[in-house]
Amino acid sequence: MTIQWFPGHMAKARREVTEKLKLVDIIFELVDARIPYSSRNPMIDEIIQHKPRLVLLNKADMADKDETKKWLRFFADEGVSALAINAQAGEGLREIVQASNQLLSEKFARLKAKGVKPRAIRAMIIGIPNVGKSTLINRLAKKNIAKTGNTPGVTKAQAWIKVGKELELLDTPGILWPKFEDQEVGLKLAVTGAIKDTILNLQDLAVFSLRFLEKAYPERLKERYGLEAIPEDLVVLFDHIGKLRGCLMGGGTIDYDKVAELVVREIRGEKFGSLTFESPEYFQSDETADH
Ligand code: G4P
Image (cartoon, rainbow, N blue to C red; front, side):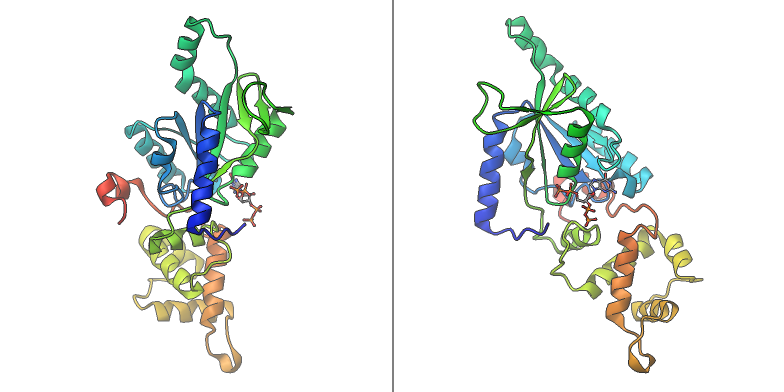
């Protein structure tokens, strides 16, 4: 799904999320484990304010495991609860319920002390498009049965999904926009497939990707394209890949668009293994967050 975000859409999305916030005890903020910073909505803190939140690093199967560990430590250091999950395979789902229970134990103990009857935790999923929200909802729903219909006294038309006895999930996620004003963020969103019909130039995307691989995973780049050393000049690298893979135009000249497409397709198809495109060291404080 590609969404064009205009100011009107953003205001509407924000309004919808703010409305739903009132119905839940906790937010599950879904991000892409390969780009945990770039796949967050830029206004998320302001929008959800003090509502308890659990950050879910989804698609962890596609991310570099060591980097995911670093990100989990980073969130822990920031005092934010976070888990790595794979919504597609249903990995990490039990931990979501456990972590929610932990985060809300004090609130629920207070309610109990006041004589309020115990009830399930109410949660909603929030995230930018393509981060895996529907996949996670379906997984949680399938795992643990039926929709409950409307919960009396809560709302008019919101359906809740029961996840075991302890959790109820809003059946529609909150969809928010990505940080698209930053060129590098846009490139990362495109290379991970969060932005599909990319408005970015494919060659720019391939150049960004190759430079990234050269810096972060040079051995994998060398191995994949049979290189002894990575040429400094990217045109030489494009030529090499083009010849190797037969990305040629009539007369045998290299078709750079084809090379670019191939490189991006191979990255998305995990031909370079599991990749993480940004490290937490980069984002230690807000002052450096935009770099
Ligand atoms: P959304 O509701 O947030 O927009 O995202 P959605 O669930 O539609 O997921 C977007 C794509 O990401 C889907 O691929 C989905 O299968 C995939 N996905 C979701 N969670 C995971 C995960 O944990 N691991 C992996 N590897 N993939 C995941 P799709 O429908 O096939 O779309 P496409 O991008 O392949 O075309």
